[in-house]
Length: 463
Ligand code: PA5
Image (cartoon, rainbow, N blue to C red; front, side, top):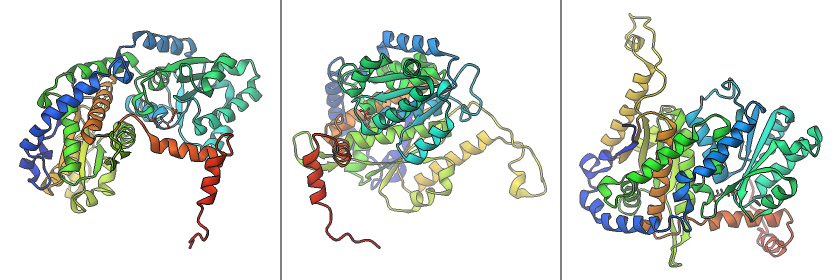
């Protein structure tokens, strides 16, 4: 069985005590609200929450695979231009499912992948200096089709493509993923005749990884997108049940709610014991933060709700964060991402057998050591009364990654109901976008610019 499972033994009072752990009755009290939350989320399938339907969009999956096949072997580089939900899933899938050294040595016929999710002029400027337009395909990804960062990047790289290849030929080096009708990017697609894919209505950025937003770049770099969506579909089926004890999404959502509301743990640490899964932890951080971090409840009350996601990587962060986690404030709960069967086994050769400090390692494997360190950290946290759960991947495959993505999306949607906030809007992000437009002198934003100028401190305190 390759099902992703959640072991929540160490989140319970029986393991870490009643002050920090969840009691069975507390969990049971969330069973009925959880079932109601699930029903209300699932009732929106095929309506305004179309991300729930993404695993079954076979025609879209075929179109993605056809496009990937049609360009295979033509480009040495694929570059995703996007940000937030239009980039994090791409990176997460690539880092989970391709070699960490893919770009050094891409498999035959496959391109390297770069996700430029920042407009830092040093990042973009270095890339401008380094890339060869003739061998590069740009996937411009923006649901709204108007995000300043992505549009600016597009203008920069488009100009470079046109200068190098000419107006006509540059068009084969751009493929766009955006809304079907709205936004400047869709208008540009129509004008230029770029190849394009659609971010369907009802699929917000952070819930879009299983749409062409995440699947197109995956297909281009050889990831099995059908395996991914099959995994997501399998998890959707598991999570149909309203029984909290049988539904991992309901259980995880309840734990998150109780940890913050009853156990005073506003910080949710995802501790990925796998470099391959670190990108998933980044992806989840956005999903959790943007979905639950809200000023207003759904009824319009000021609540300033939301957990703070933190991401750590094992074993690296054992030597950076774990001191704080084991002995610092009791304001965190932990989710380990664990892999039962890594792809590689690396033997540790025996040597210096007269030195016990290294001799005990000889003849063992790095995988045994890795596992022992994860287990050691889990034990240390539990003994220090720090609640923790483990999300266990039997192996890191398209199927298990697809399961994880759907599991966490559904769990966060249910959390939105528990927290009483709209998990699908992002007014705080929009506020920042509007301010940036105003500061860049965009027409129509003059009033906002004047407000910003008027509110600048008269006497800044700078040291
Ligand atoms: O999750 C979200 O909605 C955001 O992070 C967006 O993905 C991000 O702001 C980019 O927006 P867009 O895809 O419209 O360019």
